Image (cartoon, rainbow, N blue to C red; front, side, top):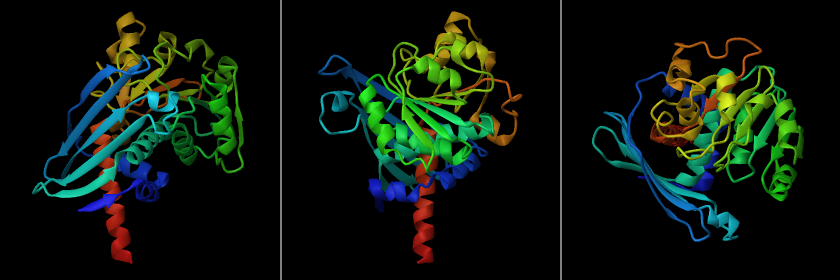
Length: 321
């Protein structure tokens, strides 16, 4: 059985390879998945969460990610990330434990690659500007993932409720010579952006549909409960709506269920998921002026796909040495 610490995970999961591996995995039958979310009040008045995400590709592999989400780790200055996790990977034929993986690092890489795959299939090929909404631990990985599929991006703006965190991320971000700046004017930045990526824990919409320019791509990552919203109903109404999977978005997240409940869109307006897009069952973006919205719901199937790729890469390196 192998153990992958955070350094080994980041070293083994380069974005170019991982994004392509996820695309390939989405052209096969999806694993069976479950999801269990437990919540309790946090010490500072918010909510702490314990999330369990098992997945099983019968005869191939099975695994489970266990995740703790404690927002006070950042706000209370504990020096710990909000999200911490472990991943356990097992053989699908005989049930042998194969690997124990740092689930926090795996989550960063998997989540960013999921959004990047969505952008690769949906964002304009000539996208030149990226707005990152949220400056938490996941933000630099999301930016790196999007740059991997849209190297045309030359300008990056970062907005955060706390301007100091946006400024700190902008100062330390490695962006390959691209212009990077923090902004306090979210509306102005959103109106100019070709690609907007949101990774927040917002309960009220931050992005307004009226701000989205023709051809914009909106990547919503942060909301993982029905109460959380990063974009308003108008954003969904104006956009072609896509999701990474229907089972971790419909009935699970506010950015999809909210607009359906209000009547802004119907369930039929969810045009495709990543399985359909990667298989070529839906063409994705209709034209250069279409606004596209991609809801990254994450999920156990993506964790399993990522862990299997990580182990396969490690075996290939060992065999070559």
